[in-house]
Length: 317
Image (tube, rainbow, N blue to C red; front, side):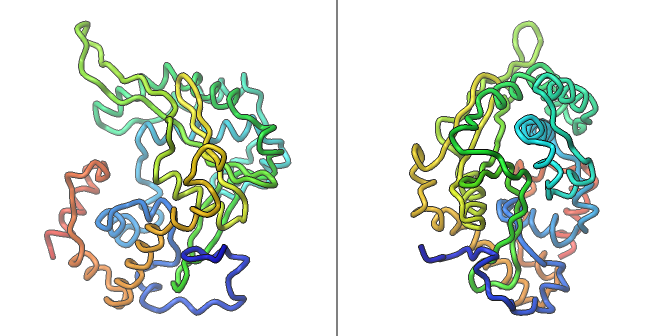
C-alpha cells in the first residue's frame, strides 16, 4: 500500500532536506503522537514556550502515573532480561530494569505508587486513594489477560520508531510498548472517574470496564507505530475487572487498508504547525498571537504557576 501520509524511516530518502532555520529557531525538530493530540494553544505553551527540561518537570496526574507504573511492570513481567536491557526509552535505559515475577511486580507497584505525589487538587488526592486500592488488580488482569501465544515472542519493549510525514521537514518519534516479530502492541489502562459524595460522606467512583471499542487517539498512535515498523497493530487495555484486545481480526480500523487514514489527522496537524512556523520565521511570540487559548479546557490542568505564566504570555499579545 502506498504511503499517503506517513513515510517509515527505512523508506525515507538517504539524504533528507536540511531542517529550515525557522524550525530550528522555534526548537521544533520533531513531532510525536503526544504533541499532535494537544490543541494548538497547549502545544504552543508546552513545546514552543517551555524548554524540554521545564516540560519534563511538569507533574503528571495520578491516572497518568498509575498507567505508567502498570505499563512498565507489565513489560518487566512479560519480557526477558535480554529484552529489557535493550529498551530505548531514556528513563528506562537509566533505570536498568530487570525481569520480575507477577508477585514481585505487585510489590514494586505498591512501593512505587505510595511515592506518587498527587497534584494539589482534591480530585488527584482522591484518585490516589482509590488507585491504591485497585492498582494491583489492574496489573494482575494485564499480566494474566495477555495472550502471548497469539502474537508471538516479545522481542522488544519501548522500541523507538522514527518516521517522516510526507512532504514535511520535521521527523516524528514514538516508543512502542511491546514488539513481536509480527506485531506492535500498545498497552493502555482504564481508571474510574470521580462520582458524587455518598451518604456516608465518602467519594463515589464509577466502575470502569475495559472498553468495548478502542479510543480514536489510541488507534491513531498504534497505527503510526505499525506503519513505521511494517508490523500489524494491537491495542491492549486493562482495567480493574477485565481486559480487552483489538487487532485486525475484531477492529476494522486496525486493518492494513485503514492505517494511513487513521493517521491523517496527525499528518494534517503536523503540516499546519510546520507551515505556521515557517510563515512566522520561527517567531514563538507570533505563534502566541495567532493562537486562541482555551484555559477552561480540562487539558489545561497545569500547576498554578504555569497557568499564570500562560495567561501572562497571551494577555501580553
